[in-house]
Image (cartoon, rainbow, N blue to C red; front, side, top):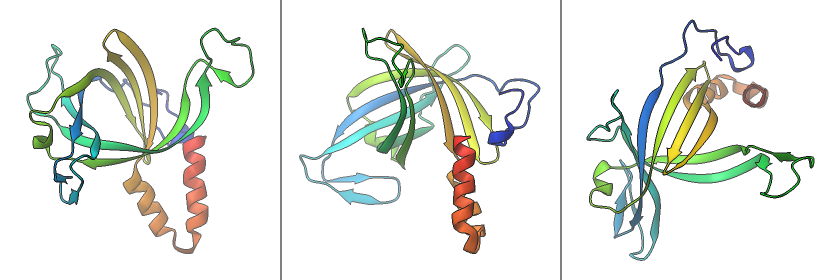
Length: 189
């Protein structure tokens, strides 16, 4: 990626972006009356479950987490479009359509939450991420090494900057369908 990627609109860079280390802590919360989502409130029944809430903290050079999170949010997965899935354990790996990695396009809704929402809540699990982020005009490409307990994974995320995509679509006027197609082609190139 340091050499650039014209298809993504990513220019070459002389040095790789720094590795950012963060810790995510996940909480499963029982809904009690109203839940604040940082600007609006939604009523819920007392027995309803709120999706997992994530608090994210930056880490210093020694790996210690900051005292306060830089974001607290609830992420709801809307849909996954699986392009490739890992082969089942013990299955013949030479079969067509099987992959050693999970490749998918995910559509998610992220809602900012009030940090006080997780105060005193039970933590479900924690993960540590080492991430390099490359920025293009419309896309953010993140290379992440994730650690959860004794397991580790590698992730590559290509995220559309929705504010840029929305501005392009709004500026397209009558050509909005062509512009949407152009954005989609850039994402999947």
